[in-house]
Length: 431
Image (cartoon, rainbow, N blue to C red; front, side, top):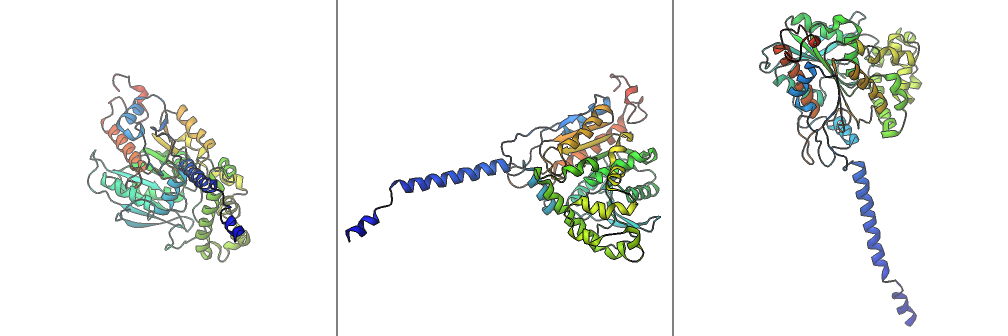
């Protein structure tokens, strides 16, 4: 009996204190991880700008405050590029509107059918002019995506007509009419849409906008032929990678979980391809494409899909040739119209090494402004106070703000300027 009583009191009185200490240490560890993962200690700052000092650029920076003012993301999660990217991908936008548009179908020479949605402006443009935004969405995206709908609704209310390309094969309810779908840099469908707008609205001027992969396509389109730049006031590209060849190695690395994002995008691409497998691989197209379905099913990266399927749509002999020919890095220097290139430093999809391309371009060419934000992720750029973001993002505001400024410049530019790129002929006093 005495022995039993002594056993009851064998627990050391220091143990409860030790357990409390372990709990505190665990809580501290969790808080540390949260602070690190959410990047809470990161500062907020205005975008880092690279540009040449010209009258036009000074006017743009003065009249488009989003480019020079501090970008403030939501306090609790907005400094995490991963959360910005994930929320854009899953939620799209807050309270996404439903702008009313008309779907257009354009037959292509190779039998494909390009589609785009046309949204008329809600009210007059502030300059009184007819301005159309021609918009190219991100990979596998279309006009029904939340971020596109939010941007279009905002642009409509600012007086812009909007034409949004639906990437070939991206809409699940639209069948392909030829054994081909969209690729990384094919500009045929976008060119067809722009041609339709120019023919249908002979008085309209164009604002070209590209998101992610769409940014590569629009910059390549403008640089391919000088006639493509006719009636174009300016171009805005957001979150593109500029060179697929340079990006492919970084996309296989686990740094910033790029390999994981690569897997997710590859899985989405497989679903799109397989949903059109009868149009893409039925009949004689099997031999022409030499598609390996076994490799498609087991593919875990975009590069594997590109090598086995995508490059064959345009007859490229190798993955290197495909990436070289379809990247805008070889064409963007031919763009003469004002060009705003926007990227985020915490974009998990675009490696920092790729940003030397737009930075170098802006340092050399008068018509280019490169804007790099600290935060924003990939097509996120949410703004807000603490937890809940605002319906409109910084990205929406900066594109429309830049477009408004360019339209204003064209309306009231000094008489000595015959075009947006000839400001060097003006003196400082006239400008």
